[in-house]
Image (cartoon, rainbow, N blue to C red; front, side):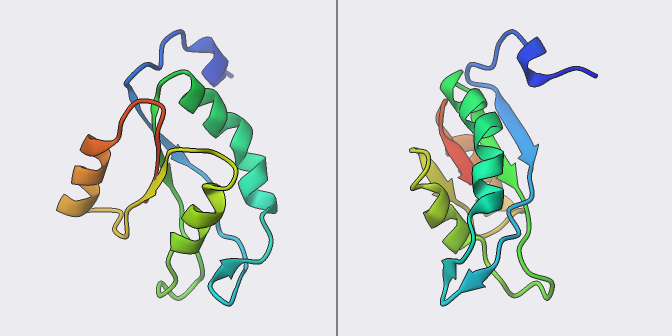
Length: 107
């Protein structure tokens, strides 16, 4: 199986990463950041090489939760994190287009 380390160039390329950021929340904050820290090596690897990193995930089971608290918690580990409240449509497309190399967008 190939690894991302087998790909020679990432500079300014949008890379969609499907990751499990479905973490427990308490009082609108991340209660356990284990899944966030487990995803960091891959995300840092891409970001440090100039990729435009787009993270796709979900949270909760009812569809009423938001990944905004996850984005705030993630920003404590890496710089350049932005959040799009939508994952599809014009707003999400605009957020992806505006993403600069080395930055991270959570959909």
